[in-house]
Image (cartoon, rainbow, N blue to C red; front, side):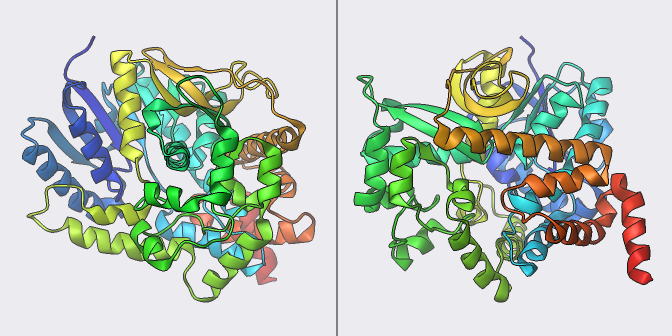
Amino acid sequence: MKKNLKIVTIGGGSSYTPELIEGFIKRKDELPIKELWLVDIEAGREKLEIVGALAKRMVKAAGLDWDVHLTLDRREALKDADFVSTQLRVGLLDARIKDERIPLSHGIIGQETNGAGGMFKAFRTIPVILDIVEDMKELCPKAWLVNFTNPSGMVTEAVIRYGNWDKVVGLCNVPIMCSKIAAGALKDKEEDLFFRFGGLNHFHWHRVWDKSGEEKTKDVIEAAYTSPEAMVKALEGIMSPINPNNNIDEDVEQKAGVQNIPNIGFLADQVRNLGIIPCMYHRYYYITDDMLKEELEAFEKGETRAEVVKRTEAELFELYKDPNLSIKPPQLAKRGGAYYSDAACELITSIYNDKRSHMVVSTKNNGAISDLPDDVVVEVSSIITSNGPVPLSWGSFDSSSRGLLQHMKDMELTTIKAAVTGDYSTALQAFTINPLVPSGKIAQTILDEMLVAHKEYLPQFEERIEFLEGKKRN
């Protein structure tokens, strides 16, 4: 087993980095880290320097002798790396604002990883990740790629399918919060419960059992509609719960911080019929009209999620500048991404130490979900070994969710193909089959507008963008 680990984080200037550093510090006795490299691009230089200085203070305050390097040279950082994590955002938050506001201007869902916005994030991100993989093949061929970049499932799929790189795991913090919701609902400890997740990134369902082996899934669902206060108490400072009446008081909402997803409740009869617990992002598909109404109200006030996050992030970096700050500030919870470090750092230590941790990750299906091909990427409960994730069997979904799952997987595959090839008709096809995008001319109109708006980050679509711009001039 190698000592003196070298861990590289691409997108090191992210406001999330202190969370990651804290996670490594907590696991200092499990990970013999020698070098931590934080990498960013020229546009992120200032943020990298600010957050990098804080990272160095955190490591020093913990009494550790790790070498923390800051660089804009990705290849320098990747040389002989053991683990590479990615948390980048192509186009920064201004691109996310466009992803949300352009669809909303046409009266459809505008969201970071769902609908038109999610597809465009994939279009911008996947070619960059594949370039990173090519560098890894040359400079650190034995390294594991730990991807936290959204849309995490699609990025992971692209790395395996088009990058021909199997040593990759996609991560998300949402399953962790779902587990905490269930524990809060049952008034039980997480460690006394067993969870099984199945689906796709930001599109999974889960089931729960207690120590005796009795399934408690229906109890969690009932608690959501009969005692939501138990979940609120468990999740203050994290994320508001599944709640049928949106009846959490304002004080609790403020304690919970800024939310990634509006707290609008699922329909009780529909979720009871499912018999499995949906994740927060299913709101966009199960109660689309309610979610759209909420988003449009925020849109009109200039308070889309991306716009709020941009202001929150600016405040965070002002805090990070404080030379006396040597811990992760509590205000970071408002940024979203709670438990990010628990996911990323636990995955790394489990691979390194062959811990066999039980985690929910994006990985090859390999038969875990019988309704999908073995070679596609799914988000499932897995045992993390030194050889990577071993997915646990979910089995087959009921007809109430199976078709939607298969539809979404095919939409993802079509989106990834468009991102890699730059083929306009494939991109239009992806828009057409996405449940959150109307088909026909409105889909094409939004696609064209977003292509031009993001042209700086979409070289693979250059020919089509030039055509659209010429058509507009004429």
